[in-house]
Image (cartoon, rainbow, N blue to C red; front, side, top):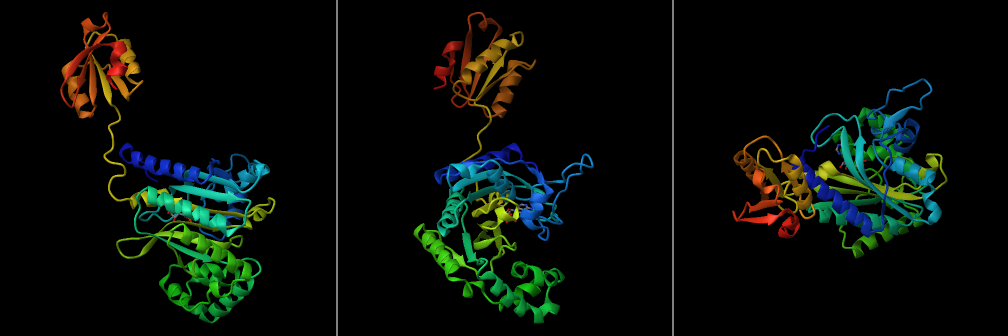
Length: 409
Ligand code: AMP
């Protein structure tokens, strides 16, 4: 886990604000779901056999024997789909477009760029199964990456078929891998019969080499799936979103259908690192025990995106205060508080009521980088006067407390 300290938080906020802006422009509404969910929901939604839903899942110690087993969410989709159904969000018409920003938790092996608490920008569309929805949310992700200033981003796209074409393809995949079993990573050997698609996702060198000759799903799509992939591609082209079809890009779980995609960035070593990804999950609602509802979405990792940003986003960070009220010893602190309150109508302001000399206070105001100081000496209180000093020009003028907001422009 890591702290996001103030100097860095300003940049985070800009990245988040741009996410809010891009999502709103595409008609998405913000949703917030708890970071704790029932273990059953997450296990069904993320898949017990996946890392995020299995060995990386943080399980809460039950408070009583009767407690429902709870976990820290490793991703947002299952919770958002639960909230969609429990909150009857589809009652007002579909599709329903939802987004959220928040913390996820995975007990991952500590390594560069991987945290046990990390943050995602998550986007989901529920209630419509068309490729146009997939293209729209990819376009939203693309716009956001451009808006935060990330360069060198690539998009990989694939279709993993549906219930009418995928079973036959999975048979072909098993038939390809069975004679090669001895050369597979032990995890992949185990996955071969149950979830062969996941073999295509393995990063072990031996498995990567075998993948190159594996049958490609794009050669085995049914007409509906092929049409949907073509529609997504055409819409992305129209939107000016460059992409590459990677027939080996997969999401390993059964409820994923058709479109899958990943945003990647070329790193310095020439390798690709995933900024985020997503896909269509038309089978998820039913797998969670809710009414059958098509869905599509993506999750992007904020840590990874922020770590990849060039230079400063939107210029130098601003000092937290624009103005400090400096009161001389003996002046009641309520005078400083009142003047600061007036200044706050226009700028960020606070009063320095510490028992130090005005000279010492001036020094710390200058270190804090404030634009103005308002000086109140003992003799000023009765007449409600102050001296406003511009710390850049050194100019100083005398004013009434009431005139302060106006003088700050
Ligand atoms: P996933 O939900 O596994 O598809 O992950 C989506 C994105 O979340 C990834 O591409 C990363 O950017 C980010 N992500 C996933 N796991 C972590 C982690 N442990 N630490 C930081 N970022 C992560």
